[in-house]
Length: 592
Ligand code: GDP
Image (tube, rainbow, N blue to C red):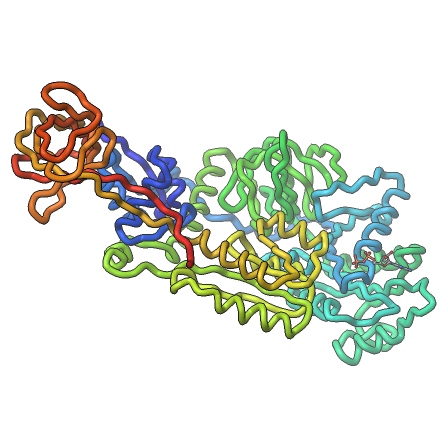
């Protein structure tokens, strides 16, 4: 029989390997555990480790490392320079500012403006970028649900924002997130326009806002001889909105924003979620080129063919050019927020590029997980403790300190390490969610609130947030969560032993032998370990037991019997070899 050949990358998760080999995860976890690796289903093991484990399990499969794509195509992402033929493109504007200063209201008002110009409103729920038109010219507006979204884009090296409108409420002045917004804008090298909002309010004090910005943040209004455009507006009455947009267009003119349209489309993933019936629904912001239905696109480690191409209102498009926010369906899997997307010639290249990106990501991940070299070390050593990451937020400093101190005291006998990767006084923020980044970190809130926006972001990024008002309940939860990280313990129970008296037949799959039960009993279904002196020969399964040529359920100490043993790799037993019959269970470990 031909050995099955299984191709895997440089590393693979325990879950994936089990699936590929049609094994149960528990079998695999059990085998890893026997080799000193306490692995969870999501843990990555490298190619060498996987090979050793497959061999140990005696599976008829040979692992092969995935070779280069061999497509002969260049699979690095192209970078396009703006050519001499490049044409004008709409400015990309991010609206930022302190909470409640009127970002959303301003954006709504600006987009209503557009409705007033005769186009349908109805902003779709899922896209965070819009377009409005002023004097026949498009302006792209990015709704940054939190500044973190913007920070994440920057993290990915994306300098996609031309202008940042910093909204400051005239009745409230400069606040922490205003300062954050200024910092982001400067880091992103974007032009700043300050929109002093809520001018309709009696308590509005634009002079104070300007003074604060000028004296504390080096943003000097033009009217004072500086170069920062500051526009007094009211999202409520719409006063000043046209002037605001005119200034955006003025900057666009000064900056001579241009992009090529006759190059393969390229841009950023700004939104991604799954929808029943539609599959992946992905928001893209096109930076260059033109995207059309039917194009093959790659983003991160996924690819697809543009099935539907929609504008921000959900209307079908035949093509979309630079600075246009669109929603597409057709990606095979969800790309990540902030991934670059690029259009390529055909599906083959798309697949090869995404595959390469996946291998690179796996390589990066593998370097922090189990490697073949670690395996030998781990066989003799205690495995490294699992890490349990938490972020703690509390209403006041006193409770924060006591929650953190108590968490550190949860005793795990060194099996799980608790790491507080962030803490602070105040409500759980989008920053906290961003810091948590994935499902392996839990955010604990003690006597604090959770805003719908943060909740939504957490759900999207699969970050777990748990709110408590009683410290013991919080600690119980932490203890349970830590227990769930512990790999199960392998428990073997000895049932009986036997000495081989004769071997009648050995095939690739089976051994028929006879022997005498020396201790306990033997029955069909038990796991069996064959030993010769100190040497373990193999593990097999006892499938049939006979006494005096009759098949029986079990045989006991002192009985002579016939045995059928199922083997997974060839082993030659001989008279005098010992068999141990046992059961093996995986038992959930607890911390107490
Ligand atoms: P965001 O948190 O920055 O998005 O702020 P919102 O747009 O949600 O606005 C916060 C509050 O300020 C809401 O109650 C708005 O109705 C109010 N608001 C926003 N803009 C104005 C304005 O120009 N004038 C007045 N009077 N209230 C405003």
